[in-house]
Length: 152
Image (cartoon, rainbow, N blue to C red):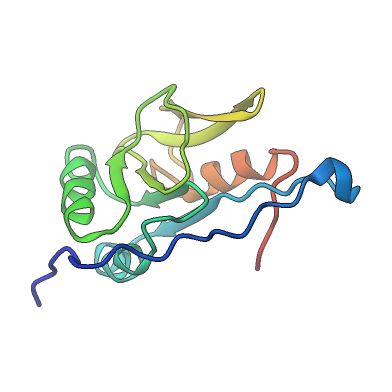
């Protein structure tokens, strides 16, 4: 099956005003999507990422168990068929809503908060359960973030 980038009308933008967390008495819950895949992952990612709207209000982290040298071409292929930007993650890069960041092969990917922004951390510590990148490391890093909602 050949995958093609969707063309045509732009997705509808959400025009509802965001409530002020200070006035509502609630702490703002930020969103971050994390996906971990292994065997069969590239095909699943094609389905999932090509279905996401272009105005997604959260960054997406993807850890695909794949060796060095293959994740950049995977990111480029997925970018060509998606409504949102898909790229290989870079160390120190600031996360932006509506973008997908794929962990580079042979690097664990974590996230660190600095002020109101999140930044990617890449490192090459020992493989986890035989994998580097390992989704465990990404999920562990994300679990340490404050004020992010958890959906199951």
